[in-house]
Length: 302
Image (tube, rainbow, N blue to C red):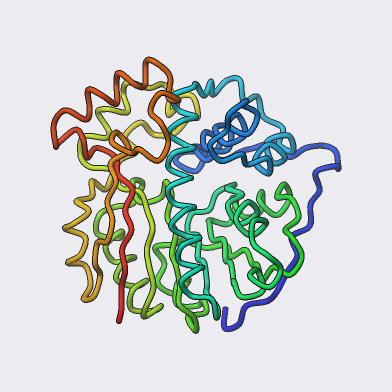
């Protein structure tokens, strides 16, 4: 992708029949986050208020009652999304002359819609946004994604985030923020570290905003049934990340923020519901469990 083409995503929300979701394994878990964001938007006191997620949900032929996303999961999806959104907007604000947002493993996330819609037309024109995921996800996304606001420089790219040639095909002529939400846990540690190194080398300067699970997350995940209900492999946490240790992957990579979900105060824990509140309190008692699942922001380059 030598140049970025300004495109307007078309929608087929009103067409029939609705597409059936045939994703399997880790990719199928994107239904959890989509359902969680949609339920959050429909709640009386939403965290993200992402009504675009509700539009995508209604465009898909799938029985979402089989997933059974509860109050605690809605909280986790909303709190993570809110933390990441805030850092993306801060990056855009600190680079007013022009930026790129690269969302790796975008799934059916409507982050581009909710954030770009919050910007003025002049601000949107200075943002290049690229959503990247595997071919079957992007094919589905092209059918069900709502239209983006006018003046949007947006493209969807199909390919693997761990393929160096795919990363090197992306434009790198602006300060870039790279977003990875719900991606790193599924990666092999070797390919994950190689991906980070490729990102830093190719884009030169910018930020990486991501979530990270440590080695305990797989065991904690057994407390929930969501992964089984999507058909994903329950052994989904392949890469247990030490947020500070990731700095060694490439020169100039620096951890600026790390926020364990269980001590995150940006969204009141009371909104998680009684069961999740107890679980989060228990996990917060010891460092090894406190850092089970974190949000991280890195800077790279000079």
